[in-house]
Image (spheres, one colour):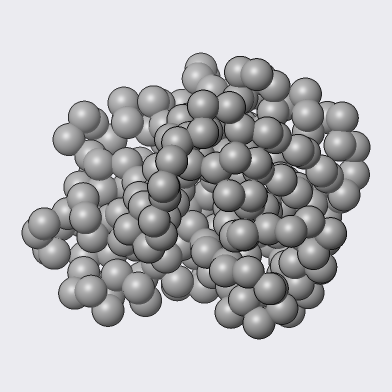
Length: 247
């Protein structure tokens, strides 16, 4: 299978990493809209317009599937992308909801949702989890983590201070939804802060779980062909991809 992975910038590479680890696809075409990142502070109509433009870009390739790695786009523009695309489109929010439900047998357990301002304002995770009977939910916009990760700060005083800024008055959850694809890069620090018993829901692992439920995969691909495109400075994207994906 040949798929496209769309993200507002570089964060979706964490989703690509999970896809590579599970050897699901023969070819992955990644597109990061790096010229217009971040999406998390933009309004709904702008996000939808950018998302439809991404679908148009992917029409240059004969894709079997498009994965929307960006939580913000998944929250606001998935239906519009599906209307415009000629192949199935799946997003990390619906996958994250499924993964959370699979991780928590007790529907009264506390769930903390982290994301950009736009993702949190959409209430997409709460709506999906409420429909499954989960009500002990709290969402928090933690946008400062995005530039911290992009500065390759994965531990240390700056990150610890940001954790205290956001979570000093937050009760420790039973599950933590990493509702932004940058956040898995600081998952070890988040796990340490909230404790080993807290279950972390990672968009990359969640999308793999979702895909394996919804689609039939007849074989594993030992080597996946990767193509990287960006709306601005594609060389920088490729450099980061080499670091994060170890290729």
